[in-house]
Length: 244
Image 1 (tube, one colour):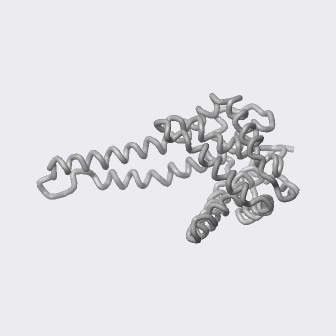
Image 2 (cartoon, rainbow, N blue to C red):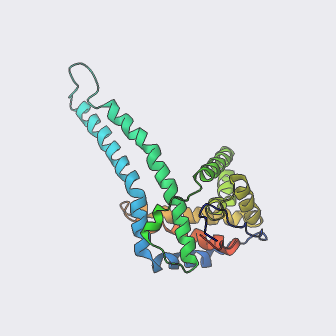
């Protein structure tokens, strides 16, 4: 029987409400990264390169144009000294880059899951195309909508939403669940320890973004931790499918 990469694995048995294990999860996630740090750094560099280049190019265009304006280099016909067509081109490229980031985001989760299972991983895993893109867009939209509504209520409820739904994306990626079912499964597993899951999600998000403050380059080391730590927590709560 041939393997269908698009087939959804059997859904995991609903676990009892989980408990956060801060130290063990973070330590095991760090060990996963450290064991294959070259692969993780390389994959992260490839993932963020298009966004970084596009962002820097757009900033260079806008700041260069502003500098020419400040220097009094206004064209005789009164038009702005930069091409609005070029600026529009940058903005048109952003959705394509964002879709690439979404594909990469899903594949980094699968890389972490495969490594967790003792399988070999490589940078080329980043380019797998069997990604449930529509379901990812759906779960991202619903979680963002719920979090935004929560943020309007004095911010804290929005953070709680992110904590309760922290397993929704890997549930979609690994078990190919629909957005609503993935969110429900995540909430059912985390609501019993909602405060600690909220704190854990915040801490992991902080750790994964910490590299930005090291001249931006540090993000190559810290960003993968969101996936390696996240998959340890997911495995401890739900387990992993037989095929990834």
